Length: 81
Image (cartoon, rainbow, N blue to C red; front, side):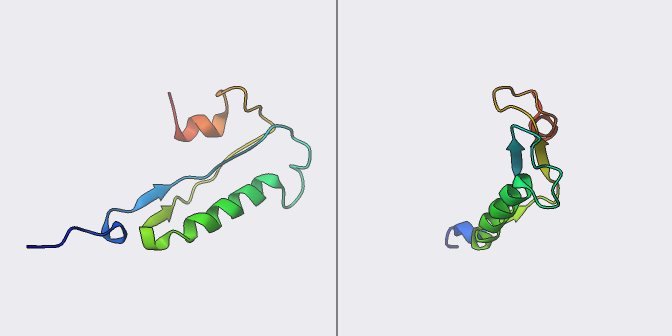
């Protein structure tokens, strides 16, 4: 009888990173808060390699949009209604 698969032997967990900043202030900089959010999240996903986490290549960034509404283009691109 085969042993059950461990989490690291299961299917890959596909990970998307969504970043948002409510104002446009600072987004013109070469490295901004959306980049910092993405890098921190990507590092976390990378640390889960043993759990078969895989980072999707697309970025989902909404800069200058309020979190009070779900009407955000990048959010809708990956999580449509």
